[in-house]
Image 1 (cartoon, helix red, strand yellow):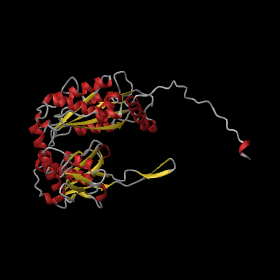
Image 2 (tube, helix red, strand yellow):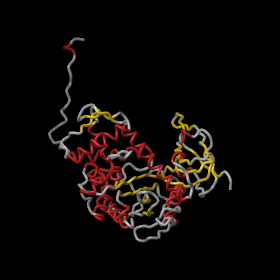
Image 3 (cartoon, one colour):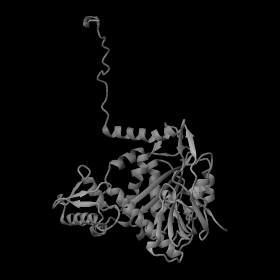
Image 4 (tube, helix red, strand yellow):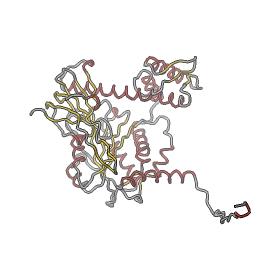
Length: 423
């Protein structure tokens, strides 16, 4: 075939000049909408065409900045499916949050809602029988210890969430004062006021709700003064955990691993950086390479997160053992992960609690080996609730293969189970 035998046929140019430019904000909202439904569509649980509430507010919050002096608030969220009208997991979660010792005087927690201080847990579960899912939130304000009552803060927050989502919400909550920072567990039904599935945009859960909580906490307690901010920053210099100072250093070191102490900041910030980098050097996480440059070791963020988690666990153990009137030196503390358990752990149950927002629980066990153990037992609904003081045995749960779409995978490879060893 010669070149003359081939004659390309050109089609019409489709752009006739009528295409409109799409604004960047519109494209952002569209991408958020597609990403929000992608996972839900893959699961086959929710109609991908369902209305996602809080989408625009969440997109704005994700790109916004908090105003100086704002109170810091942590909002942890978990989406929990309820299949086939089985409210057993929801009932187990309610039983946990209402357990003894969560109030300042050690009494059982009190469930409340938008209108009253004594909400009916059984009625809430009855209304939830046909719900496809639940939303569970943990709201913890940094300065919540200054509040004598957390209920006004939570009610104001949920009223604002209703306005953002454009629907009335059915929720209950309980305040916990059994940790160093008081916090609130909020349980939200998966139905709106018209009985439709409540679908909340991912960006609103990740950013919008926290921004609203920050605004309400700042309004209630007033903006943080410069003295308060400086005092908290001074405390961060010597803390063995990930701090706001570390986040700034890590952002600066993303390109070449180097962080500078001379970055045009004021003297106070400059001194804070030098002090923090010196502490990281003592921890083996930083190395000074010049007068103004420091190299951060790879994995610094992960190490600091683990150190902070360990510190929180030790404080939790100290409080629980003190309440149980048990004496144990810190050298006798043991943190047991599922991979660490080679043989059954036998002892007396001292306390049980929630480890994170993913409904992972822990047990504190006074072991027969003379040590006190903090044990990660995995999902809370996978282990029955046992009374304090019961003698228990904790073992690794057998791993069974699951076959899905022609592939086999392990289920619960990191799960433990606890059971009463004796009455």
